[in-house]
Length: 100
Ligand code: SF4
Ligand code: SF4
Image 1 (cartoon, rainbow, N blue to C red):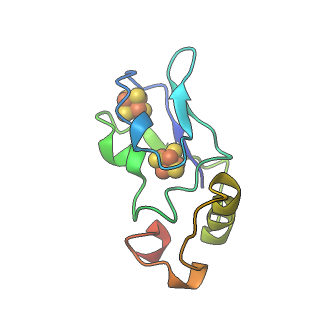
Image 2: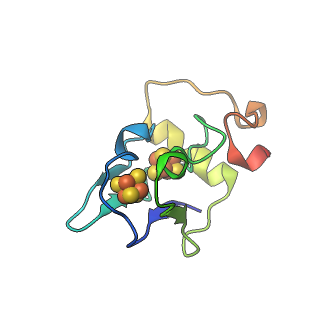
């Protein structure tokens, strides 16, 4: 499930630098997440980094874009072609919210 930003966003900008995939940018009205770049932080953090810092809790799972851990993990190779990640089976709770 890619994360998305609701209309409650107050444009504070806190989430943008926290995303390990540079998936967040400032949109016309509020900040937005490119779902193709959002891995729900799989490979980097055990929770969604944007949601962890958002002061108004408006970074939430997109019910219209349900994705498995495998699908999120598969995006990493495309987003970070020069980076090596642990194999899917080696992901820990610190590297994947799906392991909790
Ligand atoms: S959940 Fe993680 S990867 Fe997705 S937009 Fe938020 S910080 Fe970026
Ligand atoms: S941290 Fe929350 S309120 Fe601030 S820009 Fe990001 S989504 Fe909007």
